[in-house]
Image (tube, rainbow, N blue to C red; front, side, top):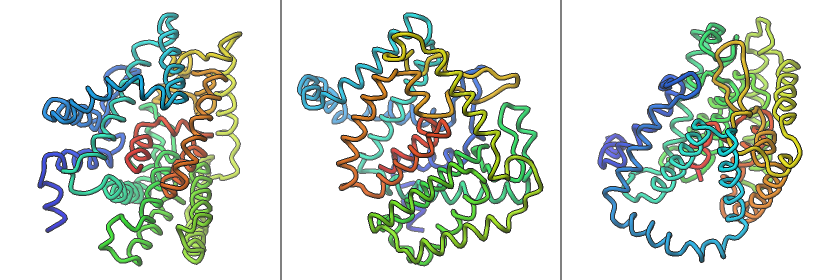
Length: 388
């Protein structure tokens, strides 16, 4: 009863709980506005929460005013970050003037900024009765549960191709309708359950059992990028002494046993030696990079530009390149990629010491993003930064 009362004791807690519930529903709460533009139910809740805080929280408004007055000092203190922001915004403005960045691109940016505002407000809100990490850890179990239920009752979801989703056969896709994105969320959940501050009232044995359930669900995705991310995360945890070698051995045993026992009726999806996805990603990368010409290799074509979208014979929900390096090169050019890497390395040196578990999650997502458009995927972006 105490847990239930915590969920509804304050409006902030109620709204955040509602967000988590919608989040666990994944693509089931997707609202398609036009052929190319869609929002999620949690987007509406996030926008409401941010606007509500701005209108009712006088201290927050004062902080914003003070921050605005300190803009010059902030820029001088964080010159590298300011240069990166200027590069990104300048590229989008230039892209907008040339027609490469349309309304959809600015909507992407607007949603990204709204997500960041929501994350900051939730992390700093003292009236929320449980931490975002706890909420996300529980949601990862829900996503695993929905996925295992889908895998048991409806392993053949090739009919979703009619609605623009990839056709999958005997792969766990859960409510995200995608094994790769489901897989990385399960990996993030696995990492969060390793934190001693996540539901400390639960026994260590129960938390480890939950991690093994997430491992079983992950194996059923047959997502090689997620497998690699999972390997990197556990290796990082071993390196930073955040996990015991004996438990990693149990995890690996459960993972391989599950992979061995899962049915493999045929098809590319369950074939871990498949080459079709790699070939498709290579073609996608070539199509996005070949559009760069002359100075665009240095400056890029603007973040979320229309040329980054793919053309499909059937409706598709994929709007950006399948690889983060390709997306950044197309959008920001090699100069922007260099700036991005410089900023990332600067902050990693700090996060490595102060937030080792989250640093492991970030590295895992970045590794995953080499093969999928993971970093800017709405669910992954929210999960990663709420776990910060």
